[in-house]
Length: 239
Image 1 (cartoon, rainbow, N blue to C red):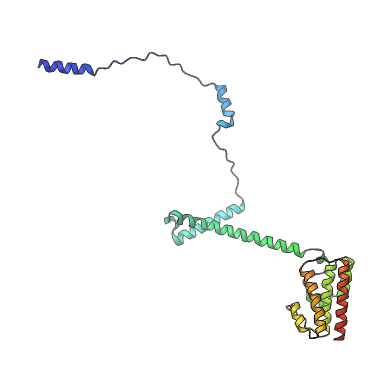
Image 2: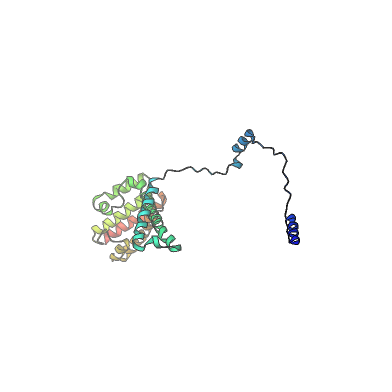
């Protein structure tokens, strides 16, 4: 028993550790308030991103509302709340795609209307409504309109009136039957006399080139065209 006790006593002496008390002095550091304010003013130490909230426009609100309604419709039809993965992303993006397409079509429509108004509005519109050929041929004094266009140096418009006057004379001589829906090629086919048909065809090409091709002609070129019109007038009288 004595040997056992001594053995345990030696074993316990081996695990005893000596704990030393820390006697070092801790110096408390204080933050320099002036230096702290300097850091606060330095942008490089500002890690919070400031965001300015922008009030949504009426168009944004409309598109958001349409998107929500469409998503509700899809949820009712397909059960979007149960969808997952790429299918759910596709379904939720469909209303925005449709809204973008509608917006594109609306913008395209207004651009087209505006471009047409620019093309159709010019010096010619101040004289007479140029699209109403029936009114010009049946009720207007085309010779007077030709002179007015020449006085304004609008030789392109004068070519148009000269051509309509030629159609008017062809109809009066019953060489063609004028109708609003007919084309100039139809009138060429209706003329039976070959010499008149040839001259009329040449002036038709000139008219299409000048009027529908939107090409301007000068005074000298118009004088040559006038001589050709006078030649056709003579052929109409002889027909």
